[in-house]
Image (cartoon, rainbow, N blue to C red):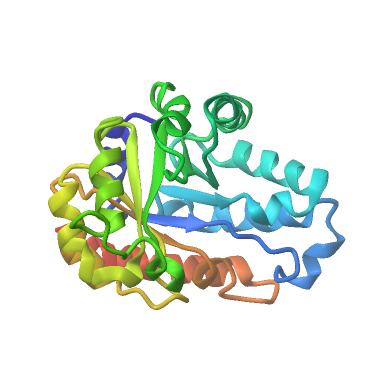
Length: 267
């Protein structure tokens, strides 16, 4: 998806919500377990219910890969079901030596037709470049993450600046604001003004709103740029909002609440 299409979708719909399909088989409603593919049945219902309130879906591949071939089939069906109007992210956190990354890029951009994939930058530019070679595809680089362990390395001083700052500054030159996006966790809100100084134009994928406690208001005020420039991911707070046969309606209600709040910040 071209950047202009993503920006247009955000402005036309009045939302920058990304729904995370972290579809844990053990947590989906029990009545779906009789379905031949319960995870896909769950995802389909969630997508149908939230389509009007978001511009993107993020699939955390670990919840599918852990189930072997059945999980991979659920993944393929889910990606194929998401319409091309919505930005599709593979949250796979890949990154390896060049020939391996080439195969990862092929898997997510050709075989599965995702718009974007998350990658880890710590093996350097040759581990990222194969992803950047695809036109109209996005590479989403881990920058400052929302987990507690971010303090172990990302927040440590490295040559007069924090390591995450060095990562953002360096990687931003490997691509451009039309094919590079960065992960910045919502629980690190105090760093967002600084992140925007380093990356004034790039999109940020922001996890950590919802169960992890990040503030949508804080993030929107500190991270938005002229094109909006942020995709706020919410996973469990939406998809597991209900446990009964009305789970999709309850998910839709929560997504609608985020949508309404986002409309205010986009004015």
